[in-house]
Length: 464
Image 1 (spheres, rainbow, N blue to C red):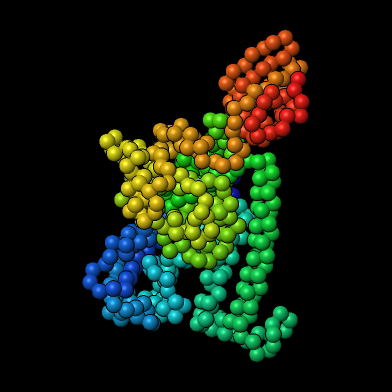
Image 2 (cartoon, rainbow, N blue to C red; image 1 turned 45 degrees about the horizontal axis):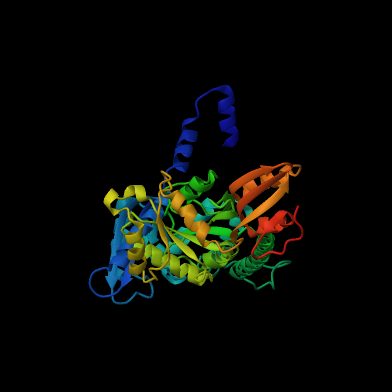
């Protein structure tokens, strides 16, 4: 087909009709039916409703076209199909009427349930975890990201190999199998287990490499500030505004998957590394948390976490609570945080008060209201000076002190370094000397301590 396309372009002729049909079918989105389930009596809870709405956003992000929705509330799950027999029949009729290609459940399905539902409806059935894995697979761009996604997918597939029909029950033999009576199912299972072990070893090398980079950064020292937050909270837009990095910013969920690091200068002229990482989501699959451990360690080892939340969302308190839960899972609950209330441009002017919004959100999320909060807009840049000021106050490394330097004019590089990395408060020239009063970080004071006139915490080697 590819050769036909190239030949058609070279001769400036129209595509054949069958080729055009194939191309159009390749770009036709899958029609999906969303199915939800909650174990309780009475009507669906607000949490289940929000999760179901979130499933619709995930499906659209994966490229699906939502054809219909079905939700069931019952006291207990049906072991064979999750939902009852009557709902399975209703789902089958809904699938046929909507000409659906796939059914997506907002609930983790067992291998048996998935197999039974596919047999009853005649179409592909996936659950929330498989949908998220599919989105991650389409978003991964770096080699590390692809390794992490592949590992998570294989761990998800391994227990679901059983019952796939004759294709997985043929007898095998010869080199590469354990014996002439081994079934293809056992061979596939063993091959996947070997592949998982290999991927885990490769990711361990990635993790070691990241740890080495962090140790080198700590030696400078250049602290890391990590952006964390619920997916689609505007982290990438804010990251681009702070760093001019040009990271993909999209309204789709998990638009940014691979971590990006950029250096930024604070008002005190200290340098920090700003890290943009994957967004969190409720019911984030355990396999993904394990696979992305190397990436999430960038958050766990950060000196400061900028917890970005979409303050205009009605679900903001639940998102804040979910992010705190995931941060606790990865060992980052004790890291200092700043609550960054993003998308302030979507709020009415009378509600733009971080002193009220921050404590209220934290209180509704069951967290301490003492976490500092700042109201910003990654889209317009409003509030960024306040955010930089808070970061400058919160970053514990490379403490800034007011000191005086006396530098010979022949050492223009040191004078320029003070202007670049410190905050010059006063500057006076006397003959061949330049005397400067500077708010200087510790790393800069140590580097130029031979020119220090006085310093509270550092020994002076000599004065000029």
